[in-house]
Amino acid sequence: MPEVLLSVEHLCKYFPLSGGLFSRLRPGREQRVVKAVDDINLSVHEGETLGLVGESGCGKSTTGRLILKAIEPTSGRLYFAGQDVTTLSKDALRQFRRQAQIVFQDPYTSLNPRMKIRQILGEPLRVHHIVDPAEVPDRVNTLLELVGLSLEHGERYPHELSGGQKQRVGIARALAVEPRLIVADEAVSALDVSVRSQILNLLIALRDELQLTYVFISHDLAVVRYLCHRVAVMYLGQLVEVAPAGALFAQPKHPYTQALLSAIPRIGDGRESIFDNPDLLVEGELPNPIDLPLGCRFYSRCPQRLERCRTELPVLQEIESQHQTACHLYD
Image (tube, rainbow, N blue to C red):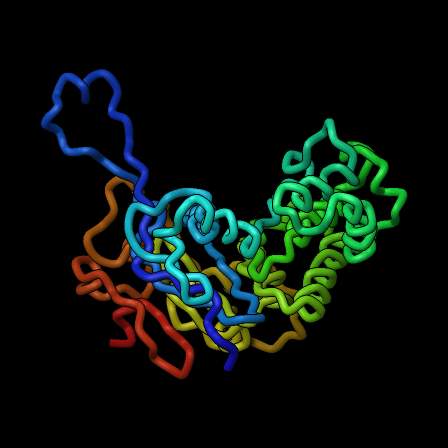
């Protein structure tokens, strides 16, 4: 098995809430926080694509930014190629930035509208001194060709490109510094379906050609199934299931994962499957993220809940080979 490239241990990110005027009048009042990411343990192997899925607000994007050290964790450790990223100096962190890059959801707002594409792609080459200044134009041409754009596209501004072309530029900019890890945060969700498939195939081809590792954040389970080797499911800041993609989509273990897959519209051949059971669908609203329940965070919406789920927080544990879940049903 390939070596572990990225590992996070007990990673947490809590955002404090401002209580306004009345909280300042009562200084002894306890500070309330939103636990956006709460005790995440995860590893990603070299050359692997890990999908990170869950409802909006579950902490997927925050986890991606923590992995890139774009925001500081409240607690926990992040290791990249065996090195503790959380304790890096400013110079060492600059080197880490070269090895871990991001592709954003909105390709337009992530590009400087005042710069031509050639300038956008040349900037990271100059900042990180990837090549000599005289070699930058040739390297930009190579990057354009690598992502399926013509040299003529380099002379355009972002507003002169289509959505798919802009996302190709975003991918090329990430590749400019020769990274080992790319975090793709909803990288295809803003694109048309036909363009989406082209970008996904491009990501797969680049992964195989350049031996890249991806953390692919998405709410589109069909896309995740097509692209990813393993899938991690998040709910209210915590991981509830981690498994190989084939195993997770064939036999999901956690009730929340089962509910997610049951909600996917399907055109079938008349044969029944485990996802045709209406009892798997969840009802009700998410718990208040400021006032989380003591036990399982899915308790109030779970159709298979036990009494102990109300007060005991389940721990992520391996129940089958390479298949982990956090659920009292498997204790």
